[in-house]
Image 1 (cartoon, rainbow, N blue to C red):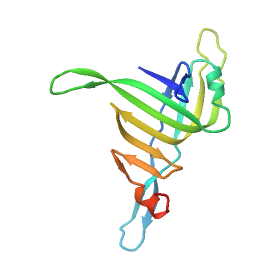
Image 2 (image 1 turned 60 degrees about the vertical axis):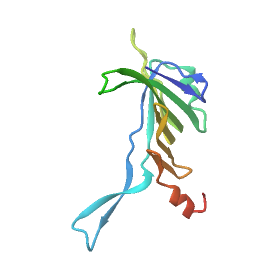
Image 3 (image 1 turned 45 degrees about the vertical axis):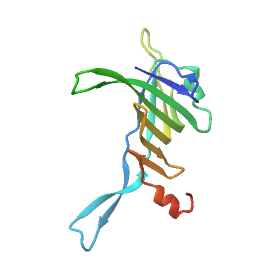
Image 4 (image 1 turned 135 degrees about the horizontal axis):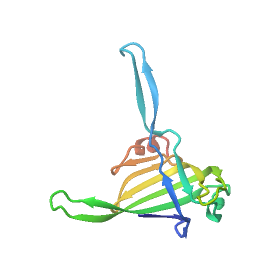
Amino acid sequence: NFRVFKDGADQLGISDIELPSLEYMTETISGAGVSGEIDAPVMGQFASMGVTLNWRTVTKSQLQLLAPGAHHLDCRGAIQLHDAGSGEMRPAACKVVIRGRTKTAELGKFEAATTMDASSELEVEYLKLTLDGETVIELDKLNYICNIGGTDYMAGIRAALGLA
């Protein structure tokens, strides 16, 4: 199961969330010494990332996300893990922290005896995924952070830019 909080405190309501797709930006390499083309991923650089919250109905919480500026969402879930050795099942915490600005808000539709199907889409500037208490991904586009599995792949770039 999961719950979503705004600014760490206010539960946003009943929704489901489509988390962003992580896609490296690429540069096409071709020329002497290359047989054809290579789309080379650029280290630490990600394409636009969007997160969509699908609401059952229009809510005040959804409309609060229209306020200009960045919004901090704290998505907390309980996932089920299976230990192949013991056969034991256990719950584990899965937390996704997102900071972003709202791009679109769909107010949905009126139809008898059904949900309104409203939605909000945010452009993600910051994403942190924690599994069972361990940070596995942290991407911060504005502060040059690309931490995957405990390695910050942008540390050298921050240092070269005088930001470290």
